[in-house]
Image 1 (cartoon, helix red, strand yellow):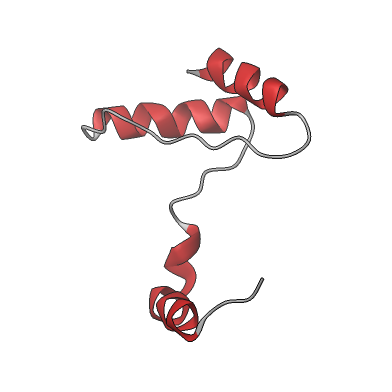
Image 2 (image 1 turned 120 degrees about the horizontal axis):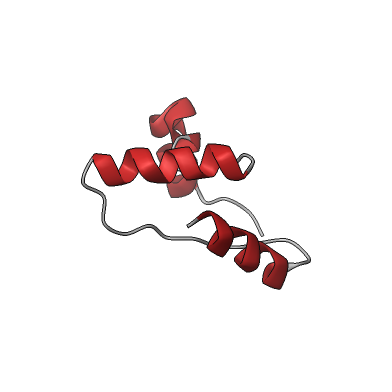
Length: 65
């Protein structure tokens, strides 16, 4: 798998902001981000669990949400 020239241009244009949409952290940090998003009018989030324990990730997210 490799990045296309189009992908490279998009990443270069976004710069460090490309990392902004992703949220990482402990339960308290994610919970705070969810609260902030809700206060800002966000009504939906997209959650994409990854890693070797997807079921565990889903359970942990459900406990925060």
